[in-house]
Length: 224
Image (cartoon, rainbow, N blue to C red):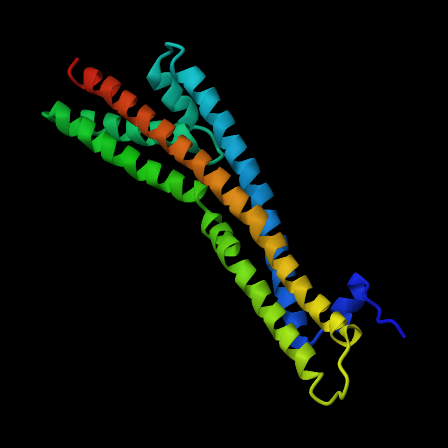
């Protein structure tokens, strides 16, 4: 009688430990794909918002008018808009003080923009560590399930006088499914982590360049 080697049958007849490993990898894979699509949308939106803000900022309009327009928005500001509002708000507050040193005013605005930049980067880097963890550990978790399943398959031969390939094939096949699931969870996570880390780094450079350019503008205004 031939053994049933269908995918579903191998999973349902696997040992409890192997099934738990498969379940864990399935849950991790679903979470990973959810974060991949969510991070893709967030980074795409961040690039679009940065393009829109820079187009508006460098159009030559009044910065005070732009600040008041953004400050009155009910939704939370992100990206360059948040950095700009944080810096311009502190710059205006410090400049109103009588006898304020122009350089101290600019440095105060820079500190606020650095804090805003740090918060923006924290938001952009959310879930990247999870993807890195999934990519690095999932193959080993799947390998653990495989080793455990193969051990059980050979242990079942202890009380058999004549071992055949048909007797160990189902156990080895169900064990290898764990490795396959580990790779299925790890490969997309690694690819997404590398790609999104690069995009986050490029956005960070973009934000930092804007911060330096805006600081130069504020420095000129402080000495007027």
